[in-house]
Image (cartoon, rainbow, N blue to C red):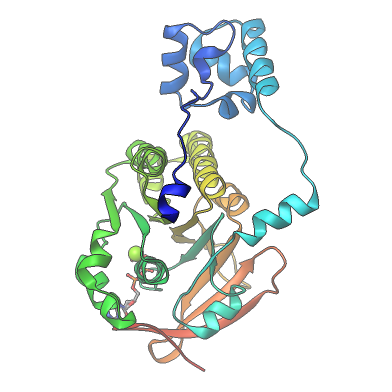
Length: 324
Ligand code: GTP
Ligand code: MG
């Protein structure tokens, strides 16, 4: 009965697209789309230089496009009440470790990017697997997306962790969408595809893991001359991830390596890859390191309205276990 009442008549209204902008014909629309301007928001926040360069239009046409895109959408302020309402939708994904959850204010947040950086074997990939299983355990129709750049996703491990939290391992595996990214362009394309998993395939994606965020960028852009180009591209990638997080209330978890800073004598002699670009785009940043006797230490570096702090845990068969 109630199902019948709740049936809604679907009225299909076509969303305005870049094609509807003044001065944009089919050819320009194609150029815009292949340069990553797939919706009006991306045009509305683009710089004129970028638009002219990617599409070959004159500056005055680019200006008209940007203005029209801006006019067509609600861009501006919202009240604190509206922000509060959005905050109420935020979910926290458990790490399985009480100490780690407390450090993160309850767990890894949806609607935000969380970056874990640390040396090899510090637990970044394990955390990705654990978050995936825990998000699936918390909601029977949730999906997790795993963008794997280093071929370290392990279905056997998912199975073991699923048993650890008491959910059906095959069901868990069927709700993880895994894609191997072969290079940085492919990685960026896969990020865009997350949107169609949700809007076209109707999957309730709650977590997107990018493991590792920077390995392809690091390998492809070698030498000082290419650094600016790499950072620009990484910046675009971070924006795309931030958009995924905020427009669909998804937890985006990215892993990052560290590089040695040989000139640093005091403090920690390591720095994360991608520098301030990745750091600023991430809402939460965690530094992971190996502790004593096989333990791992997570240090919260950056988080809105949470105190900095540390916790200690161990990766075990069934998941993360607190260590004192
Ligand atoms: P890189 O990707 O090489 O930079 O390392 P990472 O930070 O991703 O490390 P990862 O998460 O792969 O591994 C961290 C540690 O978790 C390993 O050194 C192991 O001690 C432990 N570990 C990995 N897999 C398992 C597992 O299946 N069971 C158990 N008990 N521990 C594991
Ligand atoms: Mg790893």
